[in-house]
Figure 1 (cartoon, rainbow, N blue to C red):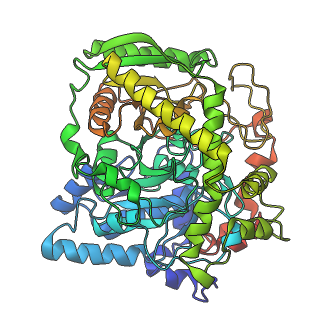
Figure 2: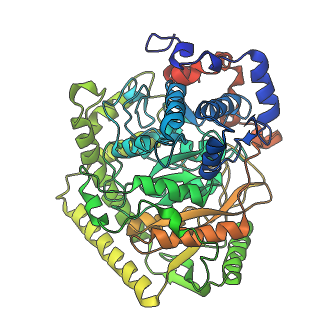
Length: 590
């Protein structure tokens, strides 16, 4: 029985989901080790896009029920068994029921919106008024059901999206490694002994692994950009204020934002058009009035790089964005050459002055914002929330059964944030003033140089090995292995967008010799999403760099680690859907 007292089979709403052992074995043998063979009639779900799905609905080659069911089958075949990338926390037990209603609506009146039956995944910090819990990856939030949808979830749901479930994230969005006490460690789908990036780890992995058509994540300091880069997908971190954030568990309202994570620029543009708009409970969105579009697909131009003035960022805050990994450097230089070939006007090199002190100031501002943001969030729920403040979270995180699953560094970060003063503290105000001055200087820099955008490597190294893993194929400057828990080298570039509040879009550019994604980022002035989408689309169409994951499971020394241990020996593997519906039992089994 699940925690609601209803059997997993009944909660899923369809007997068709209870597959025979034979079908499950077929899926495992056919799908997990390489390309997926999951398909519906004449429509191939693997690497599907929103336009292709829409066309299949119109032509009668696909129903919403079939599409959702196919993704659920794919999740069952690879997320907790086979390569076991561990992206999901729980499925939405109503997904097929919602799909059936959408099929009925389609037959009667056509698509309900621009995201009609787009199966999506949600990071575990979005409130949802359904049977999925909202926990920010923390066991201290066990059993919490939000009473209403977040602003973003409501907009996406109204446009026709089907939420397949909640996916893993770094606990409380503290960290970028993809680990939480609730879900454990999420794995990279290209090479499962590597990290997925975070904190939107589950979204990055689930979208890349073809467990969903698309997803959404949040980004405080790189948490959309980093998993997009490591997991081989497209991610948009929008301009601060473009997208409403009410109903999302906050990290820092100074830099928090929400954005689409997809396999193509087209799909990201479609979803972004749904997400934008004034949020009455988020005053920051007032700045976007008259500066957003409900249709960003109008900016998808194959020749979009022609006459674009692009600066090639080589140094950021005194740190070179090259020299850590030869393959990343070579791929980035090839990408710049491709842009020039496509008619871009290149200025190379470009440097943004500053120092490590700028990063320190950003961390200071966000650390001060963490406690009041969380406390205000919990205040809206009253007694219904299992915790009511950051202080409660710290206490609960140290209780038996939870303390051994919370990373010490995460707990220490919570404790340090609790010690800080309020938002009138001179240290906070000084750091905030310095960051705001930096933002003004960056805007002046862009405008004086006439740059339409800057481009830079999304990370200076490929995805690193998981903690405790020694992988001889990994090289990142002078970094020694094994890495400590939470140590993620080569991640300076994603800092630029949050520290400035300006938008960035991450797009695939190539692969390393051991099959790991290498990506580039386009960065522009506030509300320049149309321009960045135009450039990213033109580059994507010129290079077609994305490849589906092959779920490589290393052998030998690189696999000799507890971090890579297969969970298939768990009794939960005999319950292909139950594990998703009783994640706390699953956590105890780890």
